[in-house]
Image 1 (cartoon, rainbow over the protein chains, first blue to last red):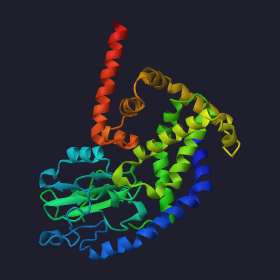
Image 2: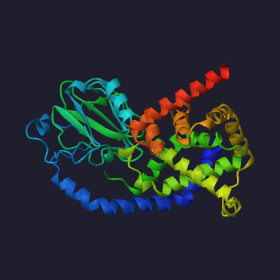
Image 3: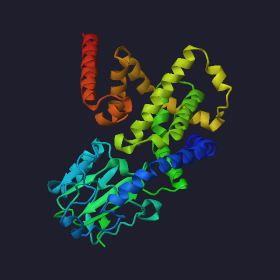
Length: 174
Length: 177
């Protein structure tokens, strides 16, 4: 950071930081009812941990309402392991999400935002072991969703939110 | 998503730190006064902070969102200039740069000289085509991201780029002959 950029940030933070948080709080309150009803309807609420195959194995999640998330992106079995292609596609679509390998020997210990899993990971309706629906509007501003799946299906899934400049290259299978 | 108050500010700060350089360069290609570059950059981020709650990452990247704001900021500046109202605004509390910051911005403005020259070369193109070429070929945007920043349909962006490049090639060929 240059001196100009640092000084400008100090001024912005001092003069407009309170307004930023106030506006965001007001927005969250107005969205609260919608989020609460969505959460109540959702069978799958993932907190950055593992989704057991049983979760996605049988009937689809209760929030699988086709068409409710028009901007969502669906990954299918043929996308598994194709990190470069999938990440290029996500970049092209302007979606702050990155697919990385899921490994038992992953030693990457990059901290998640908020110090750990904090809320609903943005998987949309229709997600099951054969497909994964990403809903970009559920990714918090300024964060990147990093996710890793088992090599054969989407039955095991590890994910979290990270700062865009500190992304893990793999996620550890617990 | 649970986001605490200080995390909203932290999230915005990450966006600021990732993009402030590019936004400063955007204005450095258009203005040669360091104080004006500083004012327009600051104005862009003030607008971004006050409207951050409306930013939807599902509709585009933070970078393209910020470029969209920077474009509006610059357009508003041109409009103010044409009405000679800048003096009023400048009296309204801008931050004066110190000597180091002035030198820093002068260096950036100097570094953008080729970019300014390219924009001048593109002056014959319609504004949107000119900006499309700038974002894709100067700033490294993907066409989709440039479309988001310019607020045009994504499908139209490739057409604009193709048309702009064809016009440029034509102009270069005429010059060469």
